[in-house]
Amino acid sequence: MTDAGTLREDRPLDALEHPSAPDLLAKFDPLIAERQALLDTGVRDPFAIVMEKVLSPTEAIIGGKHTILLGTYNYMGMTFDPDVVAAGKRALDEFGAGTTGSRVLNGTYQGHRECEDALKDFYGMDHAIVFSTGYQANLGMISTLAGKGDYIILDADSHASIYDGCWLGNAEIVRFRHNSVEDLDKRLGRLPKEAGKLVVLEGVYSMLGDIAPLKEMVAVAKKHGAMILCDEAHGMGFFGAHGRGVFEEAGVEDDVDFVVGTFSKSVGTVGGFCVSNHPKFEVLRLVCRPYVFTASLPPSVVATAATSIRKLMHAGDKRERLWANSRRLHQGLRDLGFTLGTKSAESAIIAVILSDQTQAVGMWQALLELGLYVNMARPPATPAGTYLLRCSLCAEHRDEQVGQIIDMFAQAGRAVGCIA
Amino acid sequence: MTNRDDTFAKVTALIEPFNKKGIALTDAVRFAQDLEWDSLTVMDFVAAVEDEFDIIITMNMQAEIETIGQLVDAVEKLKA
Ligand SMILES: Cc1ncc(COP(=O)(O)O)c(C=O)c1O
Image 1 (cartoon, rainbow over the protein chains, first blue to last red):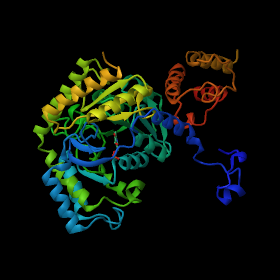
Image 2: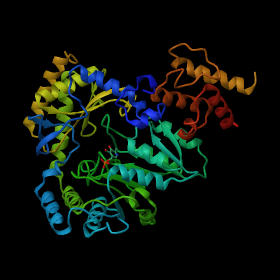
Image 3: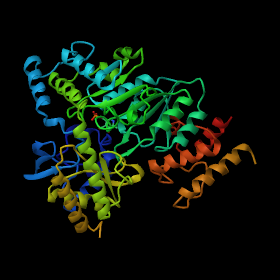
Image 4: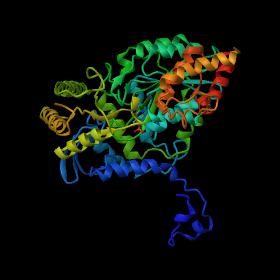
């Protein structure tokens, strides 16, 4: 509030001296009020969950209660893999808790090199750069590749890190309608022929779990002379013959110039990367600000990532289980009468679409009370203003757990009234 | 009718389907405050304007456009 009349005696002195000093947080008052109104109805805060104990990739203790995890993006269940954990412990002992430095100064250890080598082998590409997070990988790659006078052409439903990468740079930003090949083609056709162009795509769109028609989109982008960056955050590990992502499955490996990914999903730790065959790729280490001006990942993290990535090269069994679990859950929820983000299971994300915030929070809380954690997603993160419960499966979900999950959805859905 | 009048007429015709409050459309009407459009409506509308005039209104330009008048002027410039 800026009204001087509301000043109370216990206000700090300088507020009294500058009664009109605007409170920079006042702009969030509507959100604070909306949240409070929601919490006043007696529901748990969906954005303030604490995992008191984590028992396995699929189970945790939340609020003292044994809970099945169905919203972690821990697709391949690598977080507790014994080899991965052992590699991390060894690196912690041998190299210490952190690097205290940038990749380009004192922050590149043997482990960072080995992690980049693992990525090069996994993707069969010439170059790999490891960033501290996937968010920073997108920030860095997009803002550095597309400079002043260049154009970035992105899908309207792109992840926040892609949008933020656009805003961090100086390029012109053009959006096309989600997954519309025709819209992309039209927009590229209207841009100046001689201008540099970067088309940014995602293999899997994480809100609805739908995949991009990469074959067609890549062909259109190439026709117009654009370079292509593809974010495979939710595709790594279980799409394509080598598990490289949707771009591999779509057969466009030779035409995608840059692949961005993260260690925070299938790899099971934290970190981000970009791989490429571009002969000048290494120069990015010198000019990419989100690579240069931040500390590198701790030795234990890159050691766990490298071990996990190498194991994912031979994870055919896990892949099959993940797909089987995803298809079964999709079918089960559809049979119960829920509205889902895709007609069939296109990825390991199954999005349950609900009508409004009350229903979404009610459903989310009912599931939690039954012992199931899913992600709640709301605008502006979601497309078309929808409220979603996002489920992401894990290769380590056991058959009986998937059965329990479907039963809990049936019970919660009937209690809340979103299914008959 | 001048070119600008023609553009104004076409732009306002594209606004009408999203003009839920039935506001009288003039140059001074603001998209966010007066029409109360959210970012999704803006996205759909911009795509419709781009297709109507076969132009690109970059997100950088969109950030500068607040009123119908500013949009009509921008479209005039982009068509030229
Ligand atoms: C599509 C996409 N790109 C990038 C990221 C960022 O990854 P990270 O968690 O490593 O920052 C995410 C996930 O958060 C994502 O969904």
